[in-house]
Image (tube, rainbow, N blue to C red):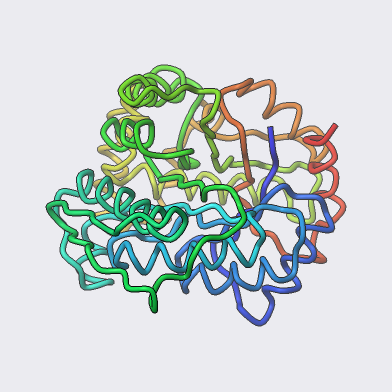
Length: 338
């Protein structure tokens, strides 16, 4: 199991220092999310200031970008990082696509499938010299003159992961992707009884298998010996769980555990704007199923015991700030690497 660091937000001016610190600590990879800025910009600096670890998006929002633009930036980052780049894509939800990015929300499963296929069509054109000829419902790509063709590179094919929670996106990950980003709101039961069976349907459809597929997930970790008191971190985790569980996207996780009433109650509080009350509804049973607590040194063994071979890459849903709790992060890195 590889241990990565995920930055949910970042400052370009600090990105070089963050990448250097992450690599020095021994993280296997560095993921950037698309929250307050473009993750590809940050990853360019991360690639420049690291030599070993993977760099990737977790995730970049797919639909506001054309497949060709995404293909170009991924191609350049793969070259610049010497094959260490992983392209992670996600749909985001309708409201953000329409009201924040100003793009249509239409058939997200099919559009994501076409996005992935169109990106691969560009890559095949540049790497193998195939004519660019992709025609789908949403995209028609049939022009790539030599002036705009970056040409081949010397590195392996760029992996594509997608964020997936529900059955159709999980199946798409199985048929079309090299990996999947599992949301931190998950449980072992969800992985065993829902996510993996749906992925397996996708693998079977395209002759793929678990052996060449990566499951990556964020983990709600609660260090009990960190700079922040454990009770404070636990309160943060309860608040995050309450926020996410109030939305329909994660309903499948709650229903698997018989927490349907909790979903409805949280949704009602969210609509009423009663954010501070929501965390009180996250009981210890929910916390135990969705989070792992222990000392920084104990967390790796506890996570490996909990998940076994269900996950291949993990990161903590915690802010990473170089110079703060470096000893704790190093203890967890050592635990995963032992």
